[in-house]
Length: 212
Image (cartoon, rainbow, N blue to C red; front, side):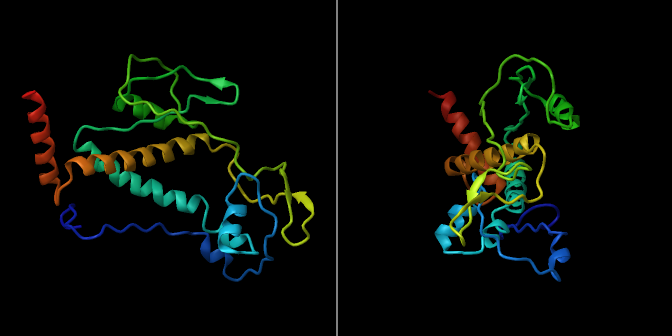
């Protein structure tokens, strides 16, 4: 970037894993028991791994973090065209908030202040609504039934460190994924080699609609 703007070269992002150094001197046994609902099993089958840790260490929230970072870049592009993406948690278990269908920056600020990413209010109507549901996380204190790849016998799934509730965080991930997909569709229609060119294409398209 030069003077706060990209110059056409690839845009790189890096998120440092601060926990990486803590594991360099440790020895740990291979993992052979997949967690139902996680990619442990499918990753081992696809790549022929007997040690599930090779899958576990790649397909984790660390990968999700980069998707969120990339989504924030896509969101910045969309804001140039007055396209904003908001999300909030509607329900966790039996606790349900009132539905919000209209958003602005004030509502967004209230949502950000909430520890569960929710604001209990009602508004009028929205534009595009994406409703998402989250299955239980695969890492549970009371583990699910599984099977050991080595012994081929039934056992309990492993317990890795995990969040108690990932619903609020999943809302942020949903924003990032939506921003990326909307930005991709937007650029497919109005894309150019610079923001100025994209804006020109966009304005020309709006002008053509007025002539219909």
